[in-house]
Image 1 (cartoon, protein in one colour):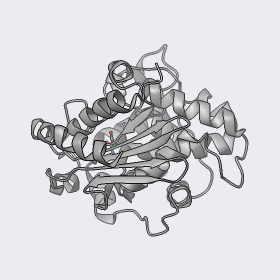
Image 2 (cartoon, rainbow, N blue to C red; image 1 turned 60 degrees about the vertical axis):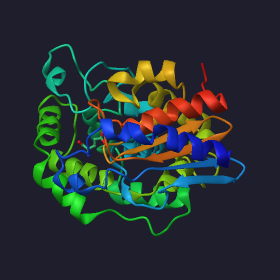
Image 3 (cartoon, protein in one colour; image 1 turned 30 degrees about the horizontal axis):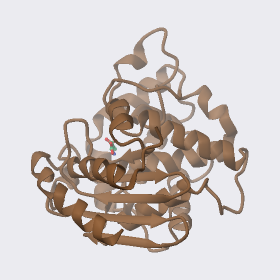
Length: 300
Ligand code: GLU
């Protein structure tokens, strides 16, 4: 496994040159485009690493999976009255459909609108509870959020603000849209490593086993929802092509991370900041294709 990881990393290193580090959130533009790391955490506890696995970066959209987990634990499948479970061909930060008269909720919890509508349904200190759950699952109590990235998103996230206020106007979002946004920006700015992502993936791959309580949902229903929604929307508008090419429930973030869960086998965490036009790590996507082929990971 160690040998395969090293080879796959080198085979895909050049791909990073085809991408661009996210700059629409100014603080993200400082990322080093040469960083590249892969970590695999098998569910029986073995861990394999290659490259820059201990470099911290912001989790961004990968936090949407943890937010959905908490929203489901707090409310059960009632969550889906305010956010759908369907794929979409629209980009991650789209908002125009939210104003169409026949649309009553965002397509799924992986696009920004759906994620804001999901986080809004978490009880209490939403971002604080997301951070706590990430610390518990990874066993890494040093994980925290980056104040710099949080403030940068809060200052510049006009499109996310428009999404939240439009959803409030349409009755999708209950409560204060500014409060939901604040928690959303905070959850996106939580800093992790590729190995933290691999551990999150391993937890999902192992049917979410190990939490003291699952609240208003049973563990299997929780696990099925998370993996299914990652499959149909985790890679946004190219989730279908990714399902055919890689075939592993995954979630990417504009910080350059990809977290993947191979049921019954392993979690995978990848970090490489340059992104393609859809907001996915270019080398990360390539590495997932290589790993899927070499380790026979596709569920299809
Ligand atoms: N914080 C980012 C945003 O809302 C998350 C997007 C992503 O990682 O895809 O724009």
